[in-house]
Image (tube, rainbow, N blue to C red; front, side, top):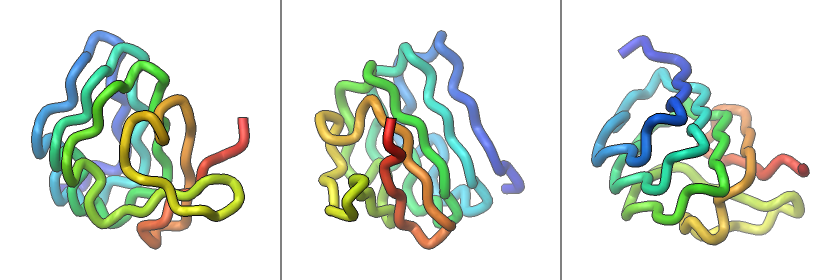
Length: 104
């Protein structure tokens, strides 16, 4: 697809399984403040993703939700892809499947 950016509205609570799977043109995702669940494979193999905002409201990140992507803290330490480590932060990268936490 040619979809390059997505803003998930605050009215959404769950990003469904495989919602954006293999959307290789997707560059930017802003997740609304009511989302509680990012289901498995939601952003599976989104190889161009270079900006993600994950709000504090996210309690669950399903298996392979961000498959192919790696997340890092401000010091470059790898983060597990679980809600307790990723929620409440913004991440940015250069399209190389590595996303770094942006200092608040």
